[in-house]
Image 1 (spheres, rainbow, N blue to C red):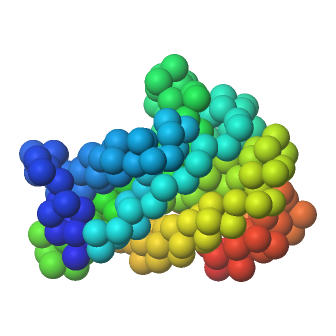
Image 2: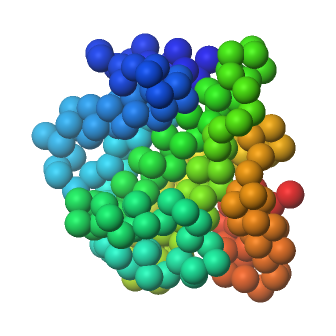
Length: 219
């Protein structure tokens, strides 16, 4: 179970006061922080930790870009209501760590999967915005990829692990979002999804998904 897997790997979980999905989300951040801290001595400060699942961690080197490069790349129509929090309010904290976007992406994937399981077990109702973060941050991550490809082409060309990681989490985001989007329904989610679904064939993020990531998330 996603909730047990994440919470069981944290010495002091966030707690369920705001729901188990939030506990899983915040506990995922705790795990990622610990993965990074445990590997700084070996790989240096310029790294990003991620939690793969089942007790396995991932280390990625940071590309030579800033989050601000990504924030200006994302068009207004794809920003969603989460954009001001992560790309404006928190920019001063994470601007030098562009792969922090993946930290948030994976946290939303895990929390969405947890809420989906709880719904199926009748532990929660559908009146929550549980899986839209998978869509929001999939879009943000695709623009992250485009910026890396443009501004740090050597990283994009040579860092095969990065692309494998993106592909892995795209698959998880795809499953979580499509399994949950009609259960955890919202007007803003639906509007963003319609814009995404109606991308023209020559749109840069649709072309990226087709050429680099086996069209994952395009259904």
